[in-house]
Image 1 (cartoon, rainbow, N blue to C red):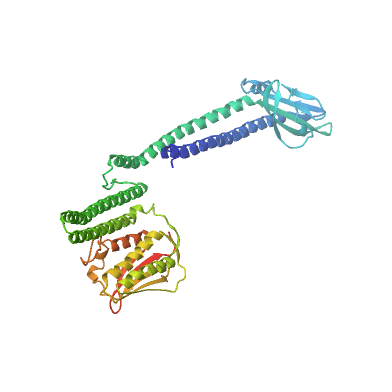
Image 2: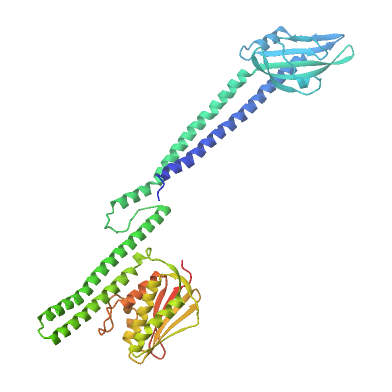
Length: 462
């Protein structure tokens, strides 16, 4: 049952392009963060070098500090308007030595030590990246700490990060576009054999069962083509079988119906009661033959492989079927002067199959033996187990069948003898029913003379 439209091409594109897009975003994000990390490292290193340079300009002397901070250096620090530096130098004991801005002190870095701290803060509504470090100095023979803070606006850093992101994302976007186009082109090219196969199937008419042929087809399409060709071959065989069956049935029915018509016309011309009775008896015999032929044809049609899906399979006991049909055929065997017996030690033989067809199979075998062997002969029905199969044998001690005819007796409408009321369908029916139950049938010579019909049926249904 179909669940709406389903496109292999769309599924392939989704499963290939979506992971590419996710990988592109992940790659851009990772590259951006890596670039941002190294950019921050470079900016932080620049702030640290500047802070150390400023710290080296302040030297202790006598009872104070000498600030060697020339005007040229101040201009250099304040020259770049886009990346203006903020700085403040103070003593830990209190008091600002010099600065160009009031920079906040990090709460956890108020105690002097040799640790270098980088932090972000807002000064005058501007986001700054600040480095904080202490230098030890001696003033009036007392150790004090010189606190140097240098900050720079984060705007330049953010702009650089954005520029890096654009520089990374743009080539990746072009790459993903090219890859998407190649994926789309590759999928279209890969699915092209399916399109050619579709065109070939659409070009086939309902009666055209010629095999499909594709040149240089991929392995998967080749397997699909082979499966379709196998289906077409099976359909062709089925159609041919049905046509042959119809032709054979029409041919076989023509003779008894023509004879029935002739006997009826002759009966209509009879003037004496005795003659009319004889003619009606012949009409009755012809009608019985026709009925028997029609029944055999219907049984053969039911046992055709094409009707296998409609064949009901139920759990049954093959041993019970064998014993029952043997008992049913005993009166006919006795009337023909024959001894019919059943030889099996199996109390139960469970399997799955169609009980009506299996009864028809073994009934045909027993009735064929009764019909074609001489009076005074014996017929034995056996049931045994060999491996994974039940084995049913119908053995008689008649004249047997020559090896040249052992395969031909399974052909439809083939009769070795033209006597009797047979129509040549019994063994064909037996073979069809056996094959429909995934079994096999063989004809063997009995010792010292006679025939054994050996039918093997699987115990477990597939």
